[in-house]
Length: 172
Image (cartoon, rainbow, N blue to C red; front, side, top):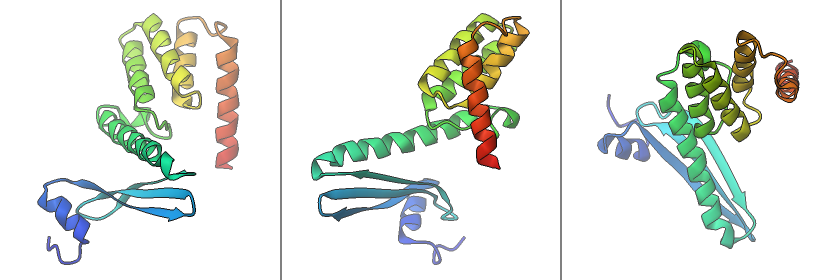
């Protein structure tokens, strides 16, 4: 593929033999600072994900860059973790926490191995980290049901129902 139509950033990324690169900018207005970044495919320049993090003073600069770094790292870790997860178990379920996703996968693996007590424990860890990650609730309720414990935790069942209603409302 000729490199003539690619941006300078894409050319550099390809010469460095990387498939993905980050392109962004830093803007300042008064005391406000905003960093915008895009995670891109080096060959096609397709934007995988866009980020924007802002702060109120120059003193926030390191906190802003740390936040941006964490967002990008979590996204990339989740993409790597997803490679080993069946499509049906990841479609439509989102979290921005790689740790939450890791617990979710471990919980599924425990469930499928027949270790329901571990599945409950691990899926609960995922929920504690990201209370809006519906997939963990969904599978937890399934484990409770399969294990004969559907009445076990009313608060989690109610949280799952509320989250499901929010998701349904957002789709309409």
